[in-house]
Image (cartoon, rainbow, N blue to C red; front, side):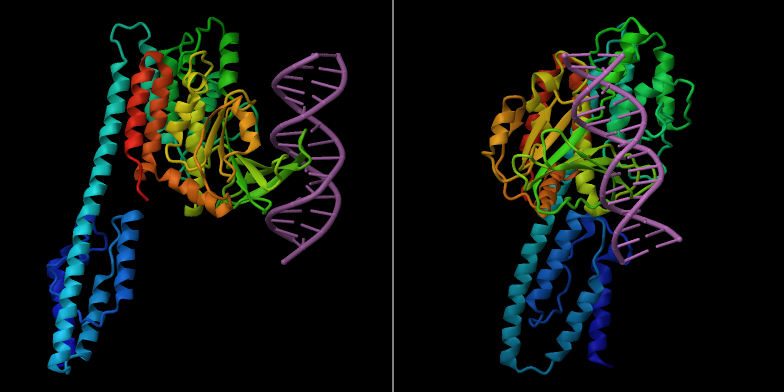
Length: 480
DNA sequence: CGCGTTTGACCCGCGC
DNA sequence: GCGCGGGTCAAACGCG
């Protein structure tokens, strides 16, 4: 019998015993002991280090991305076995050297195994903290309820609003999520993303005859039934002054229907930064005070996608490209576009949550808190503007922290400064990627959105919750 | 021929 | 009411 064949069979059997889960297509994280010392190593010292490094990178990539994806261990072992047969006729000296090197490799594998366990532990900790924080926020929001409170309906609305934001934030991941609402303007076919939540709700409230059969429609209808006398405005505007007439409500609804916008400043020679989406230009205008024309683009990755963006060069520094995003995608996005979309969506959602017509809202009283909450690890510069026609978050990813325009704008807006490198599209993408990876999970941003809704709904609650959230986020800085 | 871009016209909100 | 500016539409045009 061929000894090489024996080795392969033996390795396969041992591998199957040591890694029973490896026979399944899907493996869970705690089963991924790729470098377990229990595996009887038949590896020869001629196993080249490059392959080992590649395997380690695969493990790391697996953790970073899908966690549950398995590795092709059998192939690797088989290769090792095949290599081992080559050395069978080696001299005793060579064998001694081989065994020495084998010991070294085993030690290295042990070390990597320990590192593997450490990473699993970290992952579990992150997940546990995320769950705890989520529960904590929900508990705090619900504690705001008072059973005999005459504003019971309002609280119920808030309760519904927060989970809704949990669900809606970010780009849509299900293509057939919702049908577009029949808005008053025929061409306004906004997606169910959080950016349009308030707008949709407000519009839908006006168009009560436009019943919808989906979950959102049911929620809205239930709110209508609960608050037929106009308390519904409190859903769309936290701390909204009481409206005693439909006209007042219309004005408030109109104010909250303003679309939030996320603007990104980045240095780029290209006419448009690459964000992973497909865009079609539908207009160009000369903006006042800027010799450079402003281009209007519409997302063409799906029919009816409401996302639009404006691209314009900065008048002061024409190397700076200002890209403004508006709306949420109503279709799945490619990985390259997920980062930008989720970031802008979260930013806009946060902004809209804080842009209610309130005199003591979070954004107006402490915009830096919102900026810090929204972009806890953004290496760029976040500017929040409530005075613009649209509530706008500006992510400044240009290199010059001492940009004169910043100084000028800082008199109008609160800012959060960080140092940052050059603002090429690649760097922009990386910056947003880093930002979106805070806590490793996008749901964390969802929590922040919900937290903002809670904060803005009750100013008495603001200080404690802001401190808690910012401290949690601040302590959980990813070490990348 | 289909698709994307260009560009003038149009609509709408806002300020005076 | 009027003018201005921003945003969008849609026909014309260009390109592959």
